[in-house]
Image (cartoon, rainbow, N blue to C red; front, side):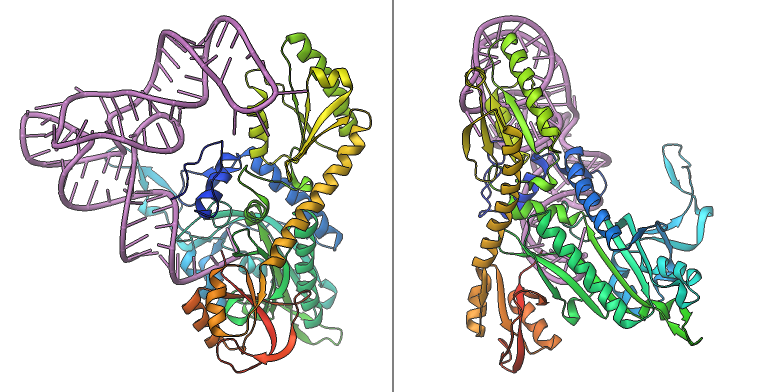
Length: 497
RNA sequence: CGGGAUGUGGCGCAGUUGGUAGCGCACUUGGUUUGGGACCAAGGGGUCGCGCGUUCGAGUCGCGUCAUCCCGACCA
């Protein structure tokens, strides 16, 4: 059983990672379960982190030539059935709108669905927007001159999952979905690969989260895709988390929605497609990558509050004096683009504030008391290592600026070191079965068949996370860890969220 | 949807053999405190997930139902 959770200790992760995670999300004021089944309320502090992610991703998309658009929440049922694999993938988890009106019930105690208001065709609340978007693209695309179309949409989607977990798998979630249309196969493949690398760059640079870029095996592919590119991250319990995907959809959707263009020779051709997305699941990844038993640890690049200042005082005069000095220092830091919060709440003691801001993951804490004011110093504490030092007020803004960068880098290095320590090459099936229990990624040879993949999954719950593209590429001859048949490369196996 | 567990003030929990609810935290007020989660005093707030039943009497027993969590299956 997990230890009782309170604000003093988030939990012991080794005992019960799930509970640790859920409690951390709630205690750190990020989100909570809503009254609606499987849905979550993202609280202001949590949303501020999502906004930072949103803003940087949006900037990156635009930098790579994309534009934003918006498509309807409701998708006519018939659209979903156009692409066979796509329906099969999503049919089991759709919320369906059947009526458009309520009426007061006969006993007058409540409302009931008005049976006279049944929709002629049911509407599906989008689980993803390929279908409605390709139905629209049909009207936008006539000639090769209309291509490429590089649209992105920020939206919410609904997938009626059996089991939910805050940020990682909620019935409704926020995401962005890019949907592009191209004249050639090569261009579409290039786009899909480009975007998975945008995600990888984002994860590393902003989230301080190392990821493996790779291709999904046939079984793990997106419903309707020819290839699914993925970024896979390793959480602190050794399990893998798919943090973002980019799909090369071939001409499947173009054919399903009859989207053809006249090429330069005047001949009709089907359009090539990609789609790619990341969701609020990234928040889950962020939490599980860096947090410790004192709570959340946020990389400075995504922290809504980068620096919190806590005054220590006995009298009102002292408080006024200290806060006065703090405001001067804050102004210097704000000028450098650092977000600073002065916690001058007078009903809480300093120790409580320290613990609370640590729980919320604020990267840097600055404490000023009467002694510091005398000596012209401050106490500077960093969240990642929990180290404290006394530093001069002179040049504080520059020092903090450097510290924030150092913390960002240290978080990445720490996570990368953890990942390195938990990636192992495994060559025999016996070894595989014992090693997979220890968690982490296993680099193994695989014979390339879905049958073997399936059997490995049944016996060990491990799946092929990806065939690595950039790092951990192991193009070498060997024998499948399960079937012993020949293999030309290693792939990554792991248990996953 | 299968297996297991749990539903009691905002949160976390206790509640013996049935006798119409209690603790810690939080909250309010006053005071003393403030360099790592303060203390004292006085207060406010719940009919025990919901429904039906057994009983003189149900948080406690029975049946049903809903919800949540965990393990599976499914998934970003």
